[in-house]
Structure formats: structure tokens, C-alpha cells
Amino acid sequence: MPRHPASSSLALAGNAGRAVSLADVAMLAGVSPGTVSRALSRPEMIRPTTRMQIMAAVERLGYVTNGAARSLAMRRTMTVGAIVPRFGSSSFPTMIQALETRLAAHGYTLLLSAPEHKLSKEPAILRTLLERGVDAVALLGEEQLTHALPMLPASRIPFVLMWAPPESVNHAVGFSEREAAALVVAHLAALGHQRLGFIGGRTGDNARAQRRFHGFTVEVAKRGMTICEAAMIETDYGFEQGYAAMDQIIEGLDRADRPTAVVCGNDYLAAGALSALDRAAIEVPRALSIISFNDNDFASYLHPPLTTVRLPIREMGEQAGAYLIARLRGAAQPERVPLHVGLVVRQSTGPVFEGAIRRKPATTR
Image (cartoon, rainbow, N blue to C red; front, side, top):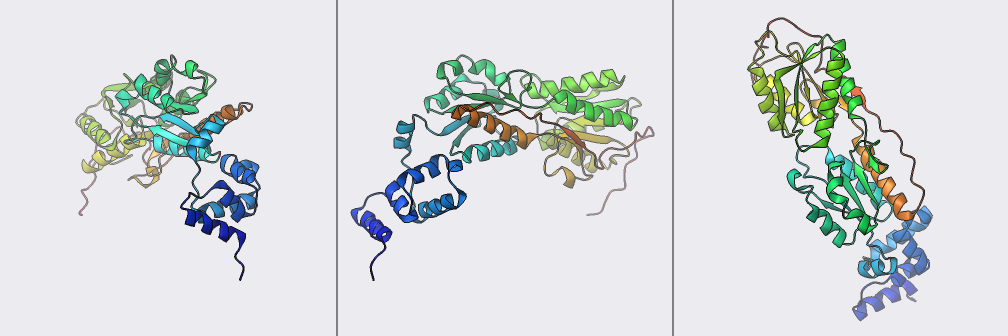
């Protein structure tokens, strides 16, 4: 039986001990090498059926693009650098995954640096990415821009600021923290709450924490409400930190001027706070309402389910990726769709209760 030309070619490649070539893939897929090249570098230009045929050949042959040669030919590395402080208890992974997915759809690989938060503004980190030849850069927040500005113009590559006020610069992708805070305070005011506590991130070096807390204080003042100083705590974002902060607030809950609701800077802090209240046998929301920001996947599974503001975390990553792709392609900048926030009301908030704190019966485990 005569052998298929592609089979002969593959046998020859194997016998010769050479790497599988673009031509081998083209022969097996029954298309030209140029079509294979476009399918790998600009997949959106190729019909889906042809692309699937090519990718099946790539997979069957185990073909790997010669990245160095391709970069020299294109004068691009097809990589995008991103600097995002270490994830820990945060929503950054969701945003980064959305960014990476959008970039990958256009053939770009994300090169991520996740330093400690206090090191994230070090110029050396950005310099290393630029020296690696990345084609574009994604930064987290406007605070990184101050340190990046001396290098970015010289590199002449596109960059985008994620989770930054969209009105600050034309390459920022974000939402209104003031709007998010207004939803929280309005909800609590409608339930009759006047004295509030706040457990949030450290505002000294975190612009996002600063904007969130500022929006909260402005809205509280506008409505004539009060922030209980003894129940206002700055800490690191995390479950353990939320637990410890609420433990501290619980000590003063027998006072007449106690808060009737506590706002948490994110869902991880709120989850820790709810756990501390549960351990102390304090009923939520009857004795104390808890409300938060982010609407992480676990928020609806907490006890009780958490009232929180849904933030457009995934959408920020997608919009940042679309912006960079357009800049890299020399296309018109995509119209930035306003990113909205919305309150998700669950069972952790309720009407204000002014009586003495009653401990719920301890459960037997």
C-alpha cells in the first residue's frame, strides 16, 4: 500500500533526527505553510474549520514554534508583562486570568511578576520585564505609574493601568470606588443604621484602599452618620486579619455607642469577621450587620450569606487585554465600556437592633 505523503515526510523527519517543521504541519493539514503561520500568530484571520485542522496537525506532530526565530522576524516576542502584587487573599487572580485569556486568544503569552506588595513599585521589576523584550505592560493601579514613567516612554511600548480610576488617564481601566461605597452606605442607612464600623486595607501605601475608605467616609458624612472610632481598623487583606479585627471590635459591643453595622474592605476580611462573630455566638444580622465589597465566589456560601458589592473584576482584565491588543495591532482604541458596580443583598445585613447584644445559643458539634 502506498504511503501518504505526509506519513513519508514525518518518517523522514523522524529518521533524520530533525525537529518537526512548519512545512511538516502544512503537509499534514493539507494547507500552505503561510496558512499555518497565520493560524498560529493571527488565529482570528483563519476560518474555524481550517484552524481546527491545523491545530490537530500541530498536536499530532508535537510541533513547537521556534520562538527566537519568530521574534526576530516579527520584531516582537509575543509576550505581555504584568506586575501585580502577590495574590494572597485577593481578587487579582480572577482579573489576571481574564487578561491572560484575552491575550492568549490573539497569540500573546502573559509574563507575570507577583512581588510582595511593598516591593511591587520597585523600578527593577519593570526594568527586568522590559529587558526581556515584552511587547506591552499591564500595571496595577496608578501608584505604580509614578515609578514606571521614566522607563515606559523610552521603551515606546503600550501599557495599561488596571484597577485605576478610569478618569485619571486614558489608558486606565477601573470603576468608581465612590459609587461602590455609596451603595454600601445607602443600603445600611435604609435599614436604619447610623453608627458604623470599618475594617479595611492599609491606606498608607494602597491607592485602592485609600479610594474605598475615602468614598465610605464621604458618603457617611453626607448622610449624617457616624463612624465609631473604636471600630475603625486598618489591616492586611485576609481571612485571619478580618477575624482578629472583629475580635477587637467585639470587646466594645456592650457599649451604648457601639456600631450596629461593620463595613469590610473585601470579602476575605468579611469572612474572617463573620467567623469571629460566630465563634463569639453573636447573631448576624440581628446583633450586628456585616457588608463588604467584591462578591467573590464564596460570598453566597458564608454563614450567613454575605451582602456585598459586586465589582467588575473579570471585566477589568478583559478590557485591559482588549486595549493592549488594539494598541499592539495599531488599531483604533476600543471604546471603553463603563464598568459598573452593583449591590448583592443577602442575609448578613438587616434592620438596626438597638437592644443589648444577645448571644445566640451555642451549637453542639
